[in-house]
Length: 328
Image (cartoon, rainbow, N blue to C red; front, side, top):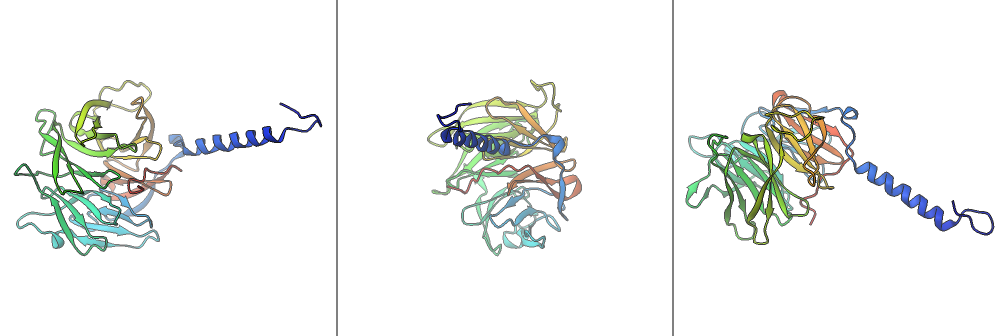
């Protein structure tokens, strides 16, 4: 170490050392902990089919199908739980059952919901007392069963429509609702059950769970909003890694942390896979809380997971913040 002429440590050097230590500690705190240090804890129950977790700034958790399909429940940070709204009352369809699946919250506190029951994209008022249909068709043809939703920082809504597709019948599509114009564009087609989706923090790409082929796709988002350069980010059926649990396992909901790592709820294995976007490698595999893990969402350093097999929500204390898609 360097000394000054009086035999004491250089103040500049000490400041530099302390700054480096603080920087290393900050970086370490941002790294997801090893899987053996994380245990899922039960947070809420009572969901007929647990899906679509979304949390607002106050820590209120919204989940679909609370106390019955078609309801959206709200669980406050103090544990108080209630039905927030009944979509079959707000936006009924004669002869059909309205049932939300994916959820997101926009800058105005409104819920964006994928209506898998009747094939619509819905926007629910912040007080839960009214709702509107943003999209129910494209190019004059009705949507089929809108499955999940994602937002970019401009408030545009991306949504998936599997349409009964499979690997043998790849007829699913991805759409975007332009919040400025109200126009719906189809961005990709010929997909085998498109499911969860998420825009990368840099807003340049979109990741998609192509559940029918057990993989995650990644698309470039061009300046005009269209998609280009479709690639396979992760193929769970044909993993390049030997130290991870993989196989013909179905990926479902997606969410990003603020460092740009992708978290994938795995329906088949009840895990959360954490993906490094640059390498496409699985860097963590967490127990999501049970089988049929459908989706996940960050709040306050916790990752909240919806577990259909247990009709419940669990949370994992990761000490990592999610990307704030409403932050700009």
